[in-house]
Length: 430
Image 1 (cartoon, rainbow, N blue to C red):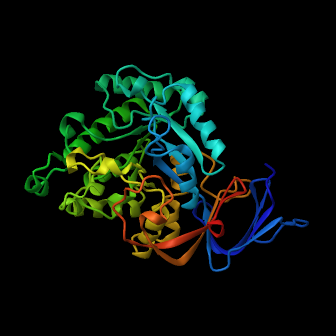
Image 2 (image 1 turned 90 degrees about the horizontal axis):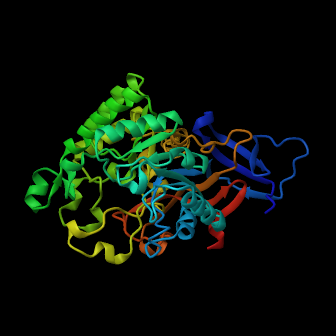
């Protein structure tokens, strides 16, 4: 489709990557940023968007999203979730490898890319499987996955058979300069657990996952990262101690980064006291001290990215007793608002909060998005910072309505989302 020339007029432009925070016009041509501020001589916009009183930021990048397709289309589809992402100001989704079939061949990568392109909404980048079938035993064809467009490799939530295989996988990934995305959990320590292990899990009679399940895995992985030189990223850390271990490793120039899922910044184990299935997460909600440690890690820059950890479910998945329910929450609809809330509550400055969902993830994924520099892809989120709204199932665009934030008052409302210079969401069209 031909891309229109667009001027976004009079908004507060916040682009953390390029250190911009000012009221400026944004000019877009051929799907890319043409100019910031004054329009080039002779430029005539086909479309002018009035952004006065609105904030203009790079399109959000969500590093961890389960799109459920292929294999679980009864929960969600690539089409539904890419459209939900666009409505939430998200222009890039990173798909995890635990689909059915697993993303361990170029054919599955190509299928996901093709289906995402058909939606005309948010784009999808793919993390491939570290081992065949995510079985943790035989290494995947990482070179072929990289050639097919994978931005990294991961074994998802599945454990590897041994540290020897983990070392070989790291060495193989390092050969192709692929980032390895790690879920830090010692399988033996966390087996069958459904919440944080502590006084509360004992009181509720629920099997717990100890802090050591994460910290033991982080220590092991850091030793192998240092040994092999692979570039690695810890996904969805949950404990204060693990954040401190990563901070030390980064200080020692070990090539590692980490992110946090946004529910862990607002919720703690105390929220599970009534056995509410929407508070069942893996990795689990931890203590209030851990929650505060995650906020500190985000503020200090140890945690360079925020993610929604989007896991849409059908209603039946949350109807069983707590340990038998499927873990995770739908998060695309709330990622922007909960990020803005961090700034509103003074945990981060607004530009820093925006950086954690734009240029921070872009640097980890090594993709050319998350900024509005001249010549970059015109991925733009335009939202009303003064608007508030209450989250209910009717207001959610994702097929998954499972969220612990129902009833919360949310700041910020997306007005327009642009991807590659195309308007993929316009609130006036609803």
